[in-house]
Image (cartoon, rainbow, N blue to C red; front, side, top):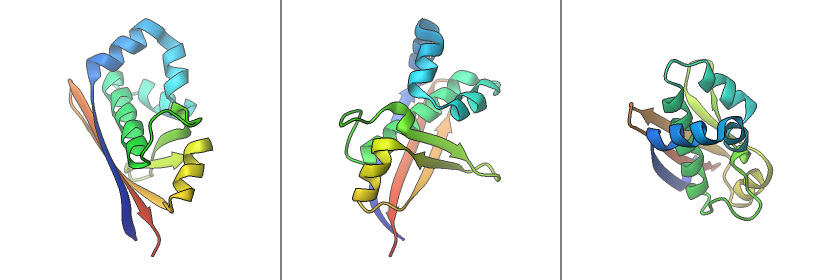
Length: 128
């Protein structure tokens, strides 16, 4: 495997908490898949987990060299967890198309959070 793209992002937990408080379910539905919502909402520190996934989405979009343009929506990037707890990425829609066109066949994702900040690093890998 060869690393061909890398993105990093950091998010203030208070910013995500404020968006959730202001926009409620509309914010959750716009930014997070049903699976991400279910995972975060059953955690003790919900805002930290939401912020970590938000940072991961931003990191993936940066690795793709984009942002929210060209038809990409927040839910095109889904943060998953393996059975052993490792975070992963599943792309949908336009984000998946762009990733494929850039030769990215898999992702490495690292997420960390504290009570004030969440950060993520995403590395796009190509076979070969």
